[in-house]
Image (cartoon, rainbow, N blue to C red):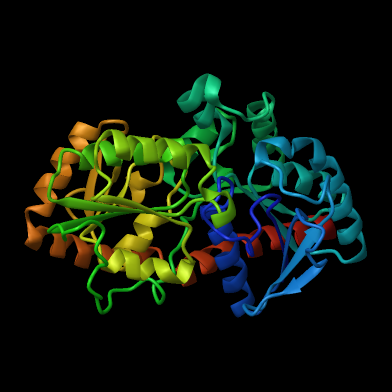
Amino acid sequence: MRVALVSEHANPLAALGGADAGGQNVHVAALAAGLARLGHEVVVYTRRDSPEQPALVETEDGYVVEHVSAGPAHELPKDELLPHMREFGVRLRDRWRREPVDVVHSHFWMSGLAALQATRGTGMPVVHTFHALGSVKRRQQGDADTSPPQRIDLERRLCDEVDHVIATCSDEVAELERLGLPRTRATVIPCGVDTHLFRPGPERPPPRIGPRQRPHRLLVVGRIVTRKGIGNVIEAVAQLPDVELIIAGGPPPHRYEADPEVQRLRELVDDLRLGDRVVLTGSVERAEVPALIRVSDAVVTVPWYEPFGIVPLEAMACGRPVVGTAVGGLLDTVVPGVTGELVPPREPAVLASTLRELLDDADRCRRYGEAGRRRAVEHYDWSTVVADTAAVYRSLSADALATGAAR
C-alpha cells in the first residue's frame, strides 16, 4: 500500500526531549520504519520548522519524510499551529491529487483536521490516532491548559468524520465514546517498544553522582514538563536517604539552562538539599537510554495524566521494574505486583513508601524485571504493533475500493 502518515508537529527526525518532542515522534518513526520493512511505500508529512530543512529526506529505515510549508519556517509551540493547518491541508490535497495514496493515518488532532481537508471528496480513507485528548488535558490542567479553546469541539468533529480511530489504550476508548465515537470505529493498538535496542544486558558500574555512591539508584527519563510529575519524584527521594536519582531528558543543550521547568526542578533540588543525590543530565541520545535504564534499580514515571507512555515499556524491555501512576496507558502496560507498582498521581509520600518497599526487596525487583521483559516482548514489540496497524489499513482500503466500485 501507499501510506501517508501525517504528523504536523512531531517530526520523526527531531531530537527528543523538548516540550513538543517525545513519544509521538518515536511512535511515528517506528511505525513508518516497520511499515516500510513490510514492503509498504511510506511518506511522513510534517510541518517545515526550519528554512534549512530539505523538502524530502529518505531515511535509512526505508521511509521518506516530506517537510510541508505551512506557516513560518521556524519552531512554534504546537498549541500555536492551528491557524496554519488550513495551509497544511491544502498542500497535502494538492500533493495527493497528483499522487493518490491508499490510506492516510493522521497523528494528533491538528493533523487529523489537515487530513480531512486534504481527502474530502477523494474516497481516500483516514485513520486517526489522537495521542492526547483535549478533554483530558482540560480536566487535568484547568486554566493552565494552553490548547486552543476550540480543541475539544474539533476533536468531536474528528470522531464524527474520520473513518477509524486507533486508540493507544483502553482508557482512551472510554473518553472517545464520551466525545461521540461509536465503539465499532475504534481499535486499541498500543504504542510499541524496540525490544532489540531495549533489552537486558551487561551493566556498567553506574557513574557517581555525589561524593559517595548510594545503595540504590532510580531513573526518570523523558520530557521535562510539569505534568510528568518529576517534582513529585524529587520530593519522594528526599524521604529516601540511601537513594540517588537521575533525571534524563529535556530541551537541547542551548535551551536547557533557560528552560522554566528545568529551573524549577533545580530550585526544588536545592531547597531539599539533594544536590549530592539528584542529577539532571539534560537531553540524551535515544541510543544511550538503554544503558541508563540498566544501571538503575527501577524506573519511575509518575505523570499526572498520560495518554500512553512509552518509557514504562522501555524499562520493562530492559528488565527493570516500573513504579508509575495509575493513569491512562500505564493502567494497561504496568501490571501491579507483576511488572511494577502503580500509585496515585501527585502523592510523593505514597510514592516514597512504595519505592522503599520495592528497593528493600532485591528478589522482588528481579522478578518484576523478568516479568516486564516477557510482557514487553509478547505484547508490545513493534513488529506486533505494526502488523496490527497494517491490518486496519487493509480493511479500510478494501472498504474504500468496494464503495468506489459500487458507485
